[in-house]
Length: 470
Ligand code: FAD
Ligand code: ZN
Image (cartoon, rainbow, N blue to C red; front, side, top):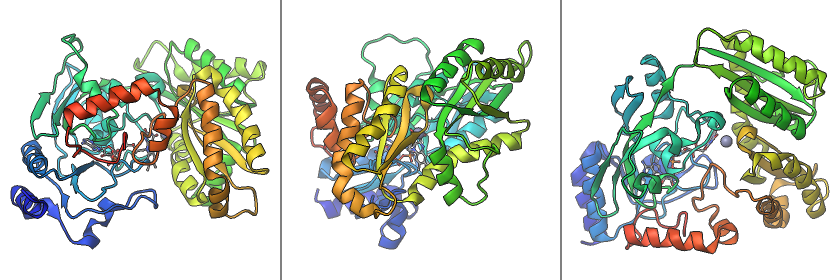
């Protein structure tokens, strides 16, 4: 079957509601949240269910027509940017198939928006913890395919840890029903695990069984000023021990990030009257309604930390509205950062104990490459993962900075990450943005294993070509 014939056959399978071919209407699917992510596709396909996905993939397999799967299109590495083949969006597949409160699981279509899943779990008196600033748009299929992290990974793990089973359409159109709800199943290789973080290069996730928790009954949200990364690290250790390992969030936010927030985001407000060099947004939460008072526990922890010089100021949210205000700062940072202008952006992780080392050395390295460059990062301190950026010195245009210093700066930072045994991409994935980093920083044996897996599942290379492995 030729390419044009295949496209006509796909249209017949999904019907008029299931595809878009006018170029203007395709824009939300071909242009990403990052303005430089612009793709092209002859057809956006929006199947209504797993069987339609399978029929479409079968046609593509016969015609060797490439497919780029897409969920909410919020990915930050260009994984969902189409490169000339069809764009297969899961956004019509947004049904919650079943919530099983006794088994603490929820079975869902892959196109469900994360926030809708959080709400559905809540309505069933359960908790689906995965949480990130894009939760109003990103989908669970995208979350699993990028193995998303977010703001409470330190307690619940990342997307892969919150999934018991998946349903996948393989590159030849076969449906694998792996929707297991089991907590124990040692029957050979971890097939589900292959698709976590695969970014649509091995198949299309169409459904998932997700892990639920009891609903947290008490939450203490605190905005703290700390003298530096080493103090934050010690505070985190103490908070974990004092709370029976109930630290839900531990986000590191330097003053520069707050200034950026105040500059770019309407209704932005500084939570503390005095300015400090570093802050932490910490939440401690318990599943128990009684027996422990998390606010009292947090106060006692902070009092001792203040005596020991680890905390210089703090405010504990007294209401849900105050808690929302603290979260507004953290959740607005990606948007504020986008408005700030182009920069060298890293999504790096190091073992947590190495964070103070990284935070001290990275600006010194940046200064050597471009004197006056502004280097700092914010984010998921509790996971050793910071969204670190290097921006031009005052007075230098962003494009000039990127042209002259972009690549050397990025590699100097990532070499430091590698020296500290870290990761060059902690939670955002590879897409097409980080292909060069894969060859530079990933062990040859790992690349070889990944390539052989790809070749065995997708010998014709139709699933999301140009991503992850190139
Ligand atoms: P898309 O962008 O549509 O796709 C991402 C990748 O997955 C692509 O390679 C695509 O081909 C593939 N894919 C999508 N759906 C499927 C499917 N059903 N089957 C197979 N492959 C599929 N990420 C974090 O981890 N933590 C954060 O804290 C975080 N914060 C963010 C904040 C903002 C403001 C934004 C814009 C993004 C943020 N991200 C974060 C990145 C992004 O939200 C996540 O990567 C998210 O998991 C992507 O989901 P999506 O549905 O939008 O996927
Ligand atoms: Zn993040």
